Image (cartoon, rainbow, N blue to C red; front, side, top):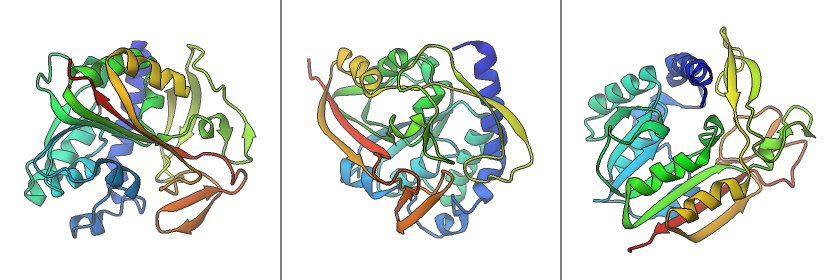
Length: 266
């Protein structure tokens, strides 16, 4: 990743982390009162995590990492935003949990975190910020113990091709190397935010995701696609129920997928 892209994205996420805890999307009051921020997709995929070590890649300000900790996992969260990690550590202390948080670009985690984990987890809007998924897959495999489980719940690459405002094709399906460059005001959690940033993101096809993970010795155990998003984080969405939102312009499109893999014992 070009240094200028990384720095711009870090600046953006530092800004977002400064106000995201106060937004309706993250519902901090309910979270502090005991609400689990995880969605049923990932909770059902991983089942009982009590006593298991779990590494959460690109954890933002830690709500989901802390939710895994509330379920009994020995959870570690990683994110490149210093603001996000500072907030995560404050929440961990405030809630009296035993999660740990590491500030790092996930593509440069080697040497900053040495142990292996029973579970490596990532979710929702994470991989578009990575230009190359081969070192990402290497990070996953390096930190996953033999026999361990990798689980990701992520927005479907088909959905990421579309302009959510009108449901029209706007972005390539395949990663063509160059980033998608856009000026954004506010964020997905607060569209009327004050600051404007340049963001750099990359499209990733399903084969871009699967191929490097398979190459590092992970085997597919489960793959599911869903015609809804568990978050109301795109324009022009309609609410179906508490955890299901659908883009009005493309109601039949896949919105999210869940991938569960196991690392070979050899």
